[in-house]
Amino acid sequence: MKILWVKTDFLHPTTRGGQIRTLETVKRLHQKHVVHYIAFDDLEAPEGPRRAGEYSAKHWAIPHSTPEKKLTSPAFVAQLIAGAISPLPVAINRWRSVAMKREIERLERTESYDAVVCDFLSAAPNIPDLSHAVLFQHNVEAMIWQRHVDHAGNVAKKLYFQLQAQRMAQYEGESCRKAKRVIAVSDADAATMRSQYNVADVSSVPTGVDLEYFKRASAGPAPVKSDLVFVGSMDWMPNSEGIRWFVREVFPLIVKKRPETTFKIVGRKPPPDIDAMTNERIKVTGTVPDVRPYLWGSKVSIVPLRVGGGTRLKIYEAMAASVPVVSTTIGAEGLEIEDGRNIAIGDDAEAFASRCVELLNDSCACQRMAARALEIVSERYSWEVVTAKFERLLG
Image (cartoon, rainbow, N blue to C red; front, top):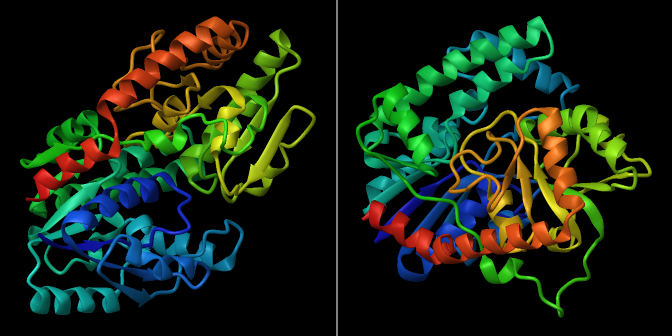
């Protein structure tokens, strides 16, 4: 097959779950097929286009003004105001590009692709004709915005999130129905798209994990010790919201029962208020070159998400690293898990804290849960198995 892969960003440095999922998939497709890759050129990440040859035969880096993400910047405020006026949701409108759309039109006209992949909904405005493309949906985007509404801290935020949720639902539904086919990352997401958007052709491909990479090894990097660890990009709103909730409402309950408990927050670009959480028990690392030592050195990996969609790569990575996981139901949404057997689930502060303390105080229970989880991911969720299913859906 000859495949055109369309995304808003290149895949290095690989710091976010969506990047990992795409990179592992497209690398394996590149071994058997001709992959062309087009994305925006981020001047702050020159490594991206430079390493695109690792997963594509050709690539195109389209100049684009990278959307400002600093909450206090005038440019970000301008985006929010524009988002209140534009009929498109702000998370989509900020990635529109006439230059990219024209280049994709040219490539489709001259290269004769067997498949075009629109990776994430944010790339959809730049696809000339979505009916020719497979839409790879890592999340149900409108669901994320609706959950932001549910957890908004004030009336103004709630109203803004509600407006964005409505616009996202309309745009997402239209795009899913237009696409040649939709590939979701979980059966739950696929079912939501069928029921809410009336999408006829939607299939799911589960999240995978690089088992060898995360396997504990004596020759690997030295573990970084902590009782609890969270691994995830801190500039993704569901992650930062979850950590604020955990530190504010859950961690004090854990410390009350187990005063010596330590916690590491590992992930890129933590907001200032999360950076300021560092104290004698909590350490905020920011970007690290390798997350594995933090997993290997922890007793429990936590996923305290109350907002989000798709599936959590961080859960399968912790399982592959033989670390037991405590998560909310939303945090583990879409994964094949069994509470009490291969994962521990807690949805309110008391329950989440209790599950953490139970595991921290019982090393045998930790080992049993970690062993069962590792068995599941080893059998069903290697990237080779996952990519083969993706490949069949493209063909």
